[in-house]
Image (tube, rainbow, N blue to C red; front, side):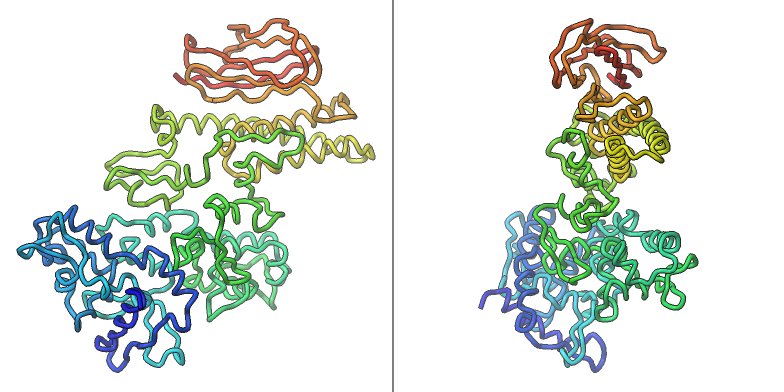
Length: 567
């Protein structure tokens, strides 16, 4: 028998420390009935906690006795979160005695050589640390509850996230530096989801049954997948019925949230298999099972992309991949960068919120309190300040907003112009323009995710719309036209690359203008270039910061882009 199985059996001496008078803890071996769950748990960090505590004691508490660790002025109750039920070992102990029993001391104090003792009795974060299992189990089901080692009593919790937050948040220990729950609560994953869904139901699904809603747009699957675990297990449609008002079984324009206390949001357990939290897992609300993902990127793509629902209009994942546009080459602005690199940045400054939140606010910019504002951008762009990062993102969003407004207007006009047309070539061109515009707007980042690709998609929608409106188009290949791509990087500090595609051999002129429209430079002048993709480099080291325009002329066609210079 390995020590994981042994401590489970030992752990059930909790019957000696009844959480309530007359109620004893089950002494069954959990692994006998829950072998898969137990197997996952054995592989998790929850099942390997003693060496972590020993290392922390040796590093931070050398020269300090066990009592000071638990009860001192700067106490840190290691037992409470790392192995609460270990107080039941050795016939039952206090937390101080437990520290002394499980970790070596010299002359009554911890040293830099402190090591783990009695490892076969240490209970790690066992099943019964998070589950109150009554003596007559399985006749009576277990309930989620945190075992409180100072009192040897169970503390009830409202849901799985509040259970996680006992140790991964400030619910029990306000001064802890583990604040993932606090970050989650301020994020869109952790609040406001029920009201958002109620508004969408009332606006878009009035007159529908909840079954029809789920078949058309499965809100539950992404906005509160673990809600299907309510009441012992329900369907996604039943979850909608349980959490939103209906009249005669139908969603109405007056539908609002109900049973608000039961709405789990996008809970911790939506993305973490609680019995193996290190695994990248997606909780499937239809099957009520966890699906292990190949990567964190794919986990995000289940709801922020089309991996789970191919027809979804939430496509940040796809935009980031730089694929899926019509008539536009695939492209990534930041190759190799994943969602979590920017949105789950965990700072390295001890005591800063960026460090304590461990990325669970999903913010690119995190207010670190007295440690100042931090930005995930600066991890890769070490020479960039937080202010410059904000300016860059703001400039990208401004560029996007302007081009998006133009594209929306042009596509709308092209659509009106073809209202009665039967020309299949023009109709196909319009469909591609509409698709690329919708694809870009489904991203919802304002052009930050894969900026060059989104700008190219918008420019393509504009170009195709202009061809329709002007009657100038290539019937053999709508994509065969002059293209000036957005420069990269943009904003830039000294040099930037300008790419363009020629449909045919042509005389090319590339000019540079300042914000006031004054020509200040010439990159190419009547240079004959073959058809294909070309790149020129602009060196602007001697130019002042500001907005510039680059104009490309090839034959009778002209294209212009806006560039931002920031030294």
